[in-house]
Image (cartoon, rainbow, N blue to C red; front, side, top):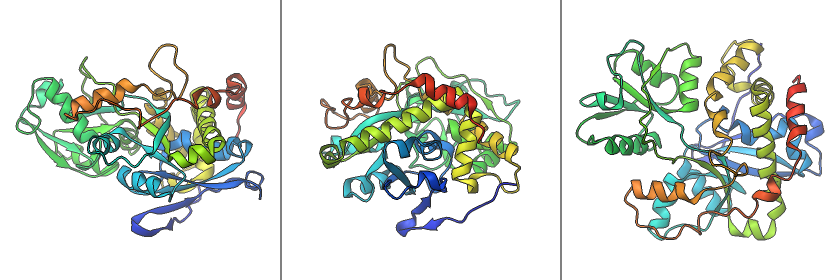
Length: 356
């Protein structure tokens, strides 16, 4: 059976999650760095950002990871701006409005660890709804109104000629399994959600059918690693090292997802379903990340893993009516070449040979 560990709870509803990496990876000289994620509790959504701890990639770069689940992306932004975390997860839906209002705190995104597009709309099997345009007059569930699936899905419906404020109604149904149960019980007609969230629902045994994506899906919704300018100046090698660890972990997962799931469960056994065997726990992780893994590699030709495409910011800003001309304050690709300076073939061979 997979054991469970209790969480260490921090202030303001944040949970401080200490990794259970092997002692050899926790050498005294390894520097502990704080990494902020916008989750209420850690899950496999950020698997490629954290399993470098179990695989030895963090140790090779001279640091050990201290993951803080801060609840929301906005909380991560504040923690990064204040220096409470050295590196945080950045998302354009938080960053762009701040930049438009002249309130951007100066953090720079330096590595894109998940590329667009990760949202879908699911309906119960056998539903009469067959397309996005069939949603007119229906109730659409979202996890909450502060989550990214809400504004993104509204914009997609708008592009299809629907008025997202009048033609459909929106219901906040919570995260994970509760959202699936709401769909299953008919509380909502359809559920707008993201890839790993749907994976959690399916792992709970709830069947879903997905409406075909429109051909006009916007390339928005990437997720990024970000840090303050002072960290670039004083700790540039740390940012390169963390980016390289994430890049290696992404290649590892693409080569052998099951091995990556085992590494994740070694670090965070409390994320396994209660009472699950090891095989069942690995299967649950794989179900949750099966769609997300496909988004690790850039969807653009001749682009190195982690490189940031400014057009994604421009598209999202336009979708939300933000008047922005200059995006240079948001991001940099200056570290990408060094981050990708490793033997990817060796990493893939390690993944193939991994036994846990």
